[in-house]
Amino acid sequence: MELEILASSDVDWTLVRLPFVVEGLSAGNIKESLTDMPGIKITNIDIADFIINQISDNKYIKKTPFIAN
Image (cartoon, rainbow, N blue to C red; front, side, top):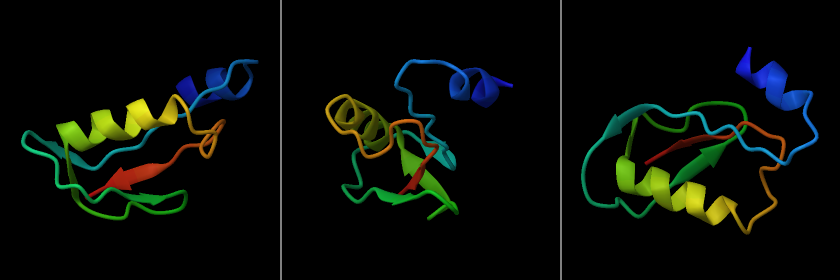
């Protein structure tokens, strides 16, 4: 439902898909994929870093990347 709403909108969007989220320091290695989950977990800090970087990066506009450590 959410993806359908985003896909039909005129705004630039990125829907980030996540594995198990763990609290902790940055692992510093964010793996990205548009087809499969590249790992089983990701730290909350790495999620925040990835999202902040998307503000100035057009790579995933109107896409749904998986991210993991």
